Length: 354
Image (cartoon, rainbow, N blue to C red; front, side):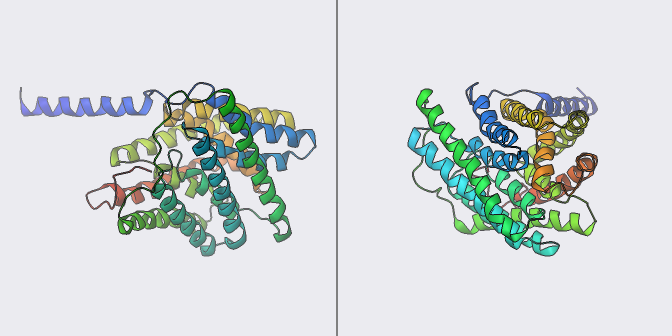
């Protein structure tokens, strides 16, 4: 076989392997009924808000219900402790971002510091997927929300009510459906050298904060989506996975935007919003560990719905949908560049993926 033929076969094999990574479905370790619990935790607060005529407050509480995604497949005590700690982490990220974030470089600095601390804590205590992502998402949304100081305590209370409601549902779920084969639990922090762990966290903080600052400097109308996309790309644990995540996120966002446009073309109705959030959460959790790109199709309209209410309607839903693609491309580029500093030969840490 000639060298040219061998090279052509190698290229073809690499392309086929990359295609399988993009569209292939993996097995999920989570039981089939867990997505039902996830949809209930995020949708039930919205249903309650719709009943009382305050769907915007229900959506904020539903965002707190996303803490259910951090429930590990372990024994009761460990899973409840994990959920409660993550709930207080959600509250801390929201409070710091909405009180200190402000606008301009201050918001970028605060978001970068939050990302640094969140990554350090998640890695140090072995928090599994989705790791730092939803903490950064909440902080990014809060840093761009135009909230009066007097309204912060009530908003924080709604976020915590949603999280505590998810903890209560998780408790009942654990009683009814106990885990038959628990994952091994480490009761001590991960044994890693703190210097490289701080270095990795600093790189992630700089990447996320810089992505928000770049979006602000470029005059992006809704800059919160750029750091969210950046944080999502940084979830990759290798250069190949970073590239795969970037392609999946952009393609998934394109399809998700079409899906979101179809959803927003329907007449607005509080009960429709609640059922849509519940259905999108169920679909996202069903496929997120199987194929990330497929999950982005459902994450995109879900995030647009959350943003439209958390940002207090300061941007029309149509405008939020129309600008998502360029924000995704910009954030994905920032995340890919930041990931190169983590996973190329000069990487600072790779023995425990975030």
